[in-house]
Amino acid sequence: MLYAQIMAGGIGKRMGNVPLPKQFLMLGSKPIIIHTIEKFILNDQFDMILVSIPESWIDYTNEIFEKYKVKDDRIRVIAGGKERNDTIQNAINYIEKNIGLNDDDWIVAHDAVRPFITKKIIDENIKAASNFEAVDTVVPAFDTIVRGDGTEVSEIPVRDEMYQGQTPQSFKIKAFQDGFSALSDEQKAILSDTAKIILLSGKKVGMVAGELSNIKITTPYDLRIANAILLTGHTAGE
Image (tube, rainbow, N blue to C red; front, side, top):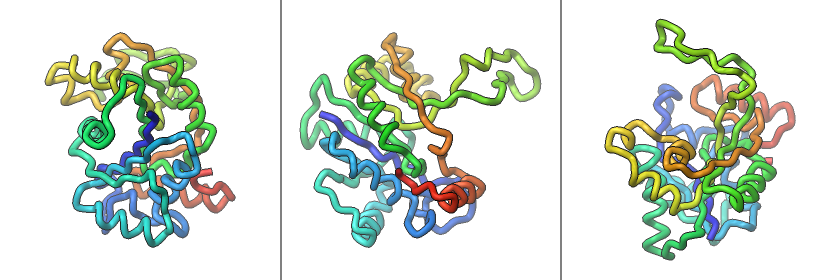
């Protein structure tokens, strides 16, 4: 089966002094998360759409879904976790408990605060799943990437080989479970990138092209940029 997971398990500390977790802040006339989930609802390839939310905000999420007429029998609002991997594992646990797991089950996991996700990006993730154990959405790195410790440069990789990761990150559930269980406790504590976890297990990870507009709204500056994108005629989620 094919599952979508909207990752909204965080509270957005970098957004500053705001009354709501960032996924619930207004972007234009609707909360950010509404823009995001509307695109996934339009895709009929998903068997279920899991929305992972801080447990204390589940009731609020259901309320705003009702307010903005987000209705789809495939939607399940569930509790996220403390860290990203916990949020993913909670979704897997939900699937296992309520439906059961199969070896060919996939999750297309997307940040709730990337509201400009396009149908093309989602479709390309799903298409690439037939050739890989996981798929990463990326855009070329236009700036030179510098590796260092904050004081001294240790490496400057070839820019043409560098990409910036976005979401969705899509993965076969079994590949994630196998890769995560093989990590040491130290690795589990520091590794939060799903594609890297699967890559470390020796499995192939595909790449699909993202878009520069597929930004992640993390700071107040990002939110201003997102509103500016709306004003130029780009509808969030199209």
